[in-house]
Amino acid sequence: MTARDRLRELFCARALQLGDFTLASGQKSNYYVNSKKVLFHAEALTLLGELLYEVTWDLDFQAIGGLEVGAIPMAAAALIAYHRHGRSLEGFFVRKKAKEHGAKELVEGQLNTGDRVVVIDDVLTTGGSVLQAIAAVEARGAQVLRVVCICDRLQGAREALARYDFRPLFTIRDFGIEPAAV
Image 1 (tube, rainbow, N blue to C red):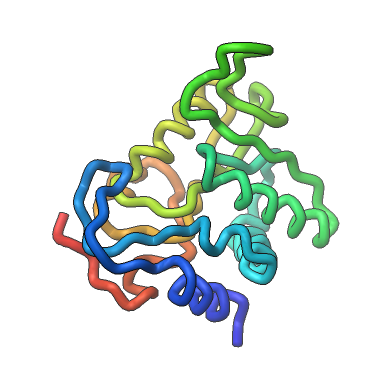
Image 2 (cartoon, rainbow, N blue to C red):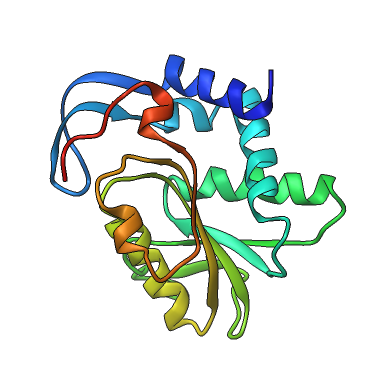
């Protein structure tokens, strides 16, 4: 079994929930992909790190990260995988709103003007959350080379990210679900 197959299996078993849900986009859905049920599992996080490495190894970039909370364990997994492969890489995360104390930062971690970055997110519907992270990264003077998510729900994120190199690891169809009409 490949790393991708095993991670898909873990997502189907641990993260996929059926019922009545309201998504971050405000849309209603009869299913929910709760990635946090997977992102804090040792095997899954290790597999995810390798898959993030596989989908980004070809880039010359300095940092990887995205919007809190989902991107934090994802970035940590990628950083460990890069280290295992002998490559240096920095991580960062974007707060939903800047801290009101201390340095009052919106972006935490090592992200510098001119850095070339990969922006990551766990599950995308319309792409609004990842666009928030991208805006903060670009405001810091960094260049987004690629956007990677674990699961694209196929409800508009690809279109919203049309100007970026967008690479989902899975689509909702990989989890046996047909997307709702957009």
